[in-house]
Length: 569
Image 1 (cartoon, rainbow, N blue to C red):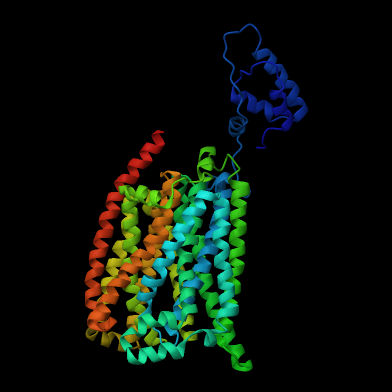
Image 2: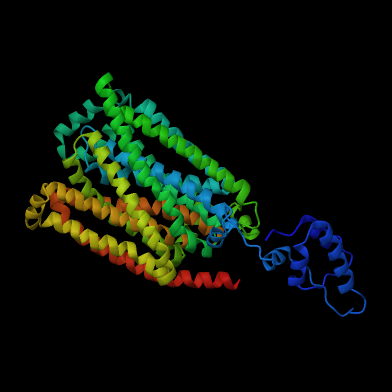
């Protein structure tokens, strides 16, 4: 059925009498040709509004209702079925957000793997330097950014804050790949630090931060991409245009398209490594240097697409009252007023914010404890930077495939079991898989026959089990933990949404990882190696996950109460 004609609607609009006829009768009239419809409709209006029935109250005609009664249905890309699943007004904001998420995760995957390759395979470095980087580089950098971000929120609109934050990241990645990395032999003080390490070998790990200082800076910017661009900029934009009903419906699902980025980024990394290796074998030169330039070009292009998506959302979605409620738009564009000190006091007084921060900090501590142990084995198995990068590319592709499967299941989990259950899946998965991984490391003897039967070594078996543990944990994190965390911000005030989110995501995440790193540093100084510290790390992991589960259960009740209050208002 075609929608009502323009002449028919004009006939209603220019009528000087109140309209009082039923929608089915109007739908029948509107289905005729424009001229006949206009004349017939005029006669019906005059007859039905005659003075004989002055007591009838006027009833305005809703064109949308008439269209529905006439058999018209919303279509998305011309499809009625798709229109029922994703109405056009929701698709208008879903597509740019999904593409933006794709770009953010594509970049994050490349940056995260690249910073690991750089710091783990650098001269005089190794997996042991990661705890020191997280404590003495990442955490101070996160705190400095949060203070700067708070001031920007007080003096700039959210739209300007987005571009002022994104631009410096992309500029640094370009400067590193095309400037700092090619000059690394000149700018890194290997001789100076090497002389100090020769007299104090126990300081090799912390001094590696200064020995490869440009790599340390890249590590900081790569880690902050996940905390700042993904958690603050992207999810802040998504929470501004999505309500809780839409978030439960789409947050677990629109990540499916975005997590194709993990698959795609993994293949891009493998392809760049293979191309650079083959070319440099013929022409000579630094294979990894060429790989880094190719990957950086991909990151910059993806960042440009992300900026375009943000502009579309601001210009086309936020201004459309059918897509975003006017009150939500006003809140999202409001500048916050509290200073830095006032903001932290305000946030610290909220149990809701404290529990939410506990979730993020606990995840950071738990994943750091497991990852550093795994990467130590990975470095031993793949000492070459190009081989290390290629393995991480395969790892990222596998993570993307697992995440897609988990996101398909995620929507069912939210609908059937609710927010509280979904929030507890990730810590449960991490604990179960962590037990298997640490069991293999602490008691490798029983697994030797299995490794032999599989045609591999116990070392490689530990690497593969650790990879499986990381894949399962991160897939549940992307599909359930992240959507749960972001939904929890939706019913909060603008102050809590902006500064609370920055404090939790930018400081809370590295604080958790730094806490895990500090524990590892103490154990390293006490027992001498990661291998000797593994039993203690396994016990600490169990305690952290129990605290995580308790905070998730507490936050579940508060979230439901906040949602009920918002709906009542």
